[in-house]
Length: 606
Image 1 (spheres, one colour):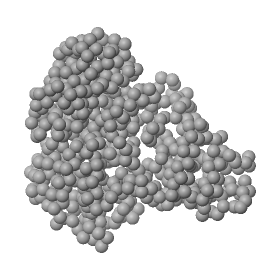
Image 2 (cartoon, rainbow, N blue to C red):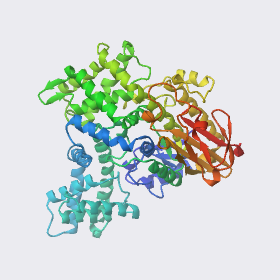
Image 3 (tube, helix red, strand yellow):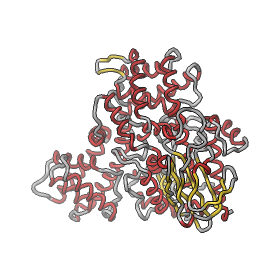
């Protein structure tokens, strides 16, 4: 009756590998098993885990490489810093969030580890004895320095990969300005690596296990549930599985990660929306577009702040909302704004207001700056909630009209991003994970908003309609109709060619010509079977100037160069059924035919 198992919070276990081995033995060799595991930069699933892969949060981070405009991200950061009046130091902000968690939320766990360290020192009879203060300082700094969720030592010691990770962390900490007393840090190093006397081995093993069980939740609460609610430059990047520190965004990185994914976890889930994501996949896709038009967004925020200045409250501890929170509110509202919501629709505005105010309260408390879950600042929260309600008041018609007008090109670019994200998820290495209702548009906010019951009847009715994957109608794009039917078509294709998607090569393809930077292209190939995927990206400026239909010649001169093994073949467009004789390249304008994507299947495989 059960097809697969998902193990959440696997890093909270004392010995994840041993648990998974027991689970595999009980479930059998054919059971599909995934684990919720946040992978850091260049981190991979530990070797030897008998699983199919992760639940796919790293896929969300990878897709941003293809959709974020790295060339203009600096402009958005500058605008954010200008409005907030502060420069962004993400390393310092990450450290502050981790220290907050270490000293408050996890103070009990830290105290338990400290007591164990003192007992180990006593058991080893180290002289001169280290003070409890120096041990606590070293323990605190080591916890804060960890860049990944955890290592995977056992009562017997550290495996090679974990030893290498720990040694790297220690070396970096020793070279930093936060380096603690060396003798105290050396003691912790010896304990974690098992270099202790026999009489202290049991205590050292217990310390190792508890330390590893703490670094994971410390990272989660510091990054996902604190830092990502404090820094608002581009909310789309504040997602589960994303890196907390700035990183480059590049299409080459995306292709490289997809190839690594095929090699290391071809059966891992590729997620874009889950019950834990900070916003729905289509809201995130829309907000990626802000990186393409930072000057438009920044000017709009300045304008909107002026329009709504009278709603800002002056409290003893400062303005409410403060500029950073204003920026966050406009961006969160932009992501969640329903495509068809008209400013004069009072009932729909009221419905959105209820969801938006609930989100606002959670965001403020998670940030833990002026209010939090244990010490609620009621006056501040209510002042910000009043501001949020003011934004969505039908009487605030001038702002709402301006907001909707400004949002239109971002909505359109976001819908293009959404289609590309969906197509990549269903054709790139991995198993597409389609969260409840997200086959249609998912513009939800953080939980509990993303756990609302989808309108399954509407989705079912729309799916029963005639499939027109060649549609370029704006209504089909804005309603989610096209996205849903693409999901259906590609799921059927995956059923028809399972080995192509599970074991087929991932081949990055090179676009050339005008708008080459606005295309992501790759192929999946296995023996005689092949699928060429071409999809648009960065559509805000490049492909249109308003909400009008795509221009017929917008891809003129653009081509996708094919490797030798894909040349001189006949391909069929799985959307239109048209066939193409392909020599050494694909003519993008011909293949897309007014759409934003093309899916070309090798005819010899059919």
